[in-house]
Length: 491
Image (cartoon, rainbow, N blue to C red; front, side):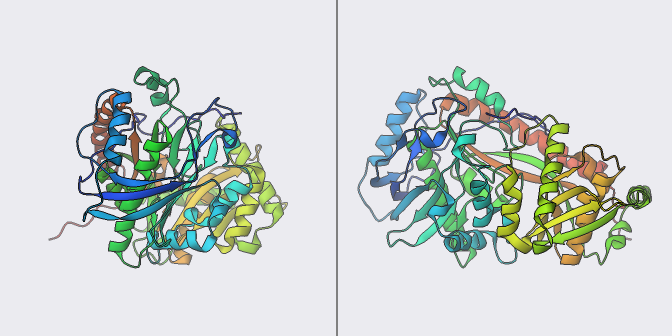
């Protein structure tokens, strides 16, 4: 069954656009293997059983800077002619093999992780883009074709077979579990296109995870090498989108550098907002509190005291300290949270234990026990190179402990980050209530490529207005809602 959506967010306007704004001198020879779907027969259909685009091709590709024709049929033949015209010249960068991987198992863990680590940068490992996290999603059946998330990961190799990079990619028959909302665009799509449905579409993301991190996972020992690899991966994404017959391709929560690469390749950029805590060199939690306004210090201490007064015991568990009993209880907490918000439990029961086994000490589970020793609540975090990432939280359905959510998800996360020497805490999507607790507004990014030119133009105009409104919102929140003391005025 396709899940029902939970709508939310500061700004609901969402849109996508298309490409063909490349440097006309950029020429590549892409060899595409693997397969992608031409169409989805039904919203609930198992996509792994649909017909695939399977013929391998190898020909020069020239990305043109001239505008697209207005009609889709003209546009398609125009792009094909541009891609297949021309002879090899000195401008040709090389021959690349682009392959679609229908499972994370089609590439080795070492190869994938080498790309993930290089793209993140030294000391900035992001656990959500490691091979093990995608493996847990697939093995648990949480992100597979039968639920509308068909793995279609991209790999690009050079002529000698060396891996240039990979991109986590899914062929989707719906828009759920993305945290960047486009359902209104799906409804509008038939007004712009001869196609009846907006789906299938391609989505580069970490499923069910609104966490900023690398999406163009390029190999390289220097920043310049990684940047060049990202540009190649962006061009390969455009090529796959054109050849596969999907309505568009969307990259959600990339890094800022990747966002610039993608918008430079013709994607339309969107800016969002989350609320993150930054470590300003604090030695302990009280050091952080002393930087807040007196009213906010008092409020946070009162919230923490309420949890202590309730007789709860808090524990932070890592790796093998987390048992099957913990994961079984946590899945119940997760479902209780979903039910309370009229949502859908995207993650299958086996996901949490599988992820815990594969990621080991990168997993931090913060739990609360009552006086009888019963596990009553938990908050799941992953530990990155410089960031603690808060993800899922929940408690027993009948548990009523004032401020427990703030304690487990925000204050315990700050204490853990300080103990681990991390630079920030990212506590998930949405939530202006986080600002008063020290989590300040930070930009998030997404990039969108839509094939139909009419919809592209309408959405591009809407996003231009949205970006202005979002920047104004971020500036206002930072200036008016910050709980921190004003910086001293120089004398």
